[in-house]
Amino acid sequence: MRKHLIFDLDGTLVDSCAICCEILGGMLAERGSDLALDVHAARPWMSVGGAKMVAALLGEACGDPDAEIAEFRRRYALLQTSAATLFPHVAGGLARLAQAGHGLSICSNKPQNLIENVLRDTGLGGLFTAVVGQREGLRPKPAPDMLDAVLAQIGAAPRECLFIGDSEIDHQVAEDAGMDFLFVTYGYAHADYVAPEDSFDCFGKLTEAVLAGHHA
Image (cartoon, rainbow, N blue to C red):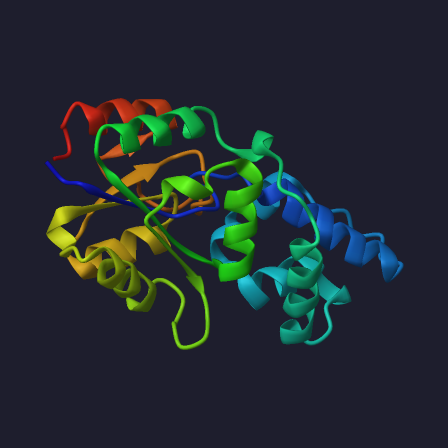
């Protein structure tokens, strides 16, 4: 049985779209923009993240994208993430998977400090063996750097792991590594993404499948 489960964060465990739109909405309001962000329309940009996300959602009000993402992240770091942002069944499902002997890790393009804040605020922090986010010297997914860093920390080969994510980016990084991938359909994938066979519309269903060994 595979022991190591590697999770994306945003769109897989945590629904961060509303808080991102809140931050960007505040930035727009301060600039006198009347642009109103549509949370539903913004969802696919969550998996892209970074300067591209901020530039797309700020639109004509965006200045230098690198400066804008730095300001966005500064504001994000000051906010507390409510446990209510966890997708249904995530907290209980992760606890059950850990109790069953699975090692749990995070591999996310979110900056390292923001991941640690989110995990602390939502009460998930103690469940994960390795937590790898954006940091100096690591290219974002779908480049292999972050996933390679997780594998190095947990001392596992790709065939011993499952990657669980919500976007084509997650699928690609897992596939490139030769790692099996499970997809959750409720996250931030683009509408034209063709979901793989191993897809789940609920974290609870995914938990049951893993515990039953259907993907071991």
